[in-house]
Image (cartoon, rainbow, N blue to C red):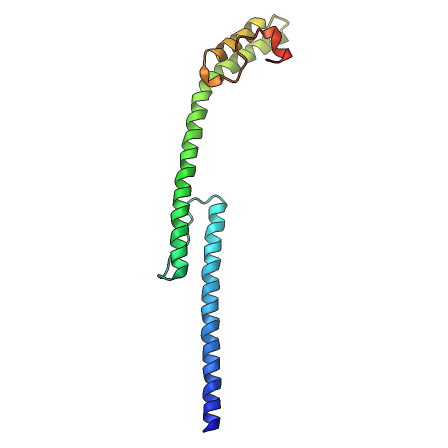
Length: 147
């Protein structure tokens, strides 16, 4: 009888250890999947999401993280849209300034007076509020001394 109880206890210990090992491996696998999805997102894959398989604690955390990643993706998309709009708004005025500056450089290289072209560049910048950081109204001769 005692040998039977010892044998039963040994089998029970092996079964419990096996179940514990299986649960541990499953948990580690889930954590590795979560880590991989977050690494993909951090690497630039804005569509990467954490897996939601069963309704356990891992899935509740994954679901919350996925909602946060969705919100972050929307915010980043908004920033991209804003940056594109700003770049578009600045492109035309800066093109006019750039053309005037190229004309001034060409005039200077050919030995001509570049002052009219530089003043045209300043006028082009002055008349467009999107290029406001320039020192408006300063004579070209004063630009080298700071604004």
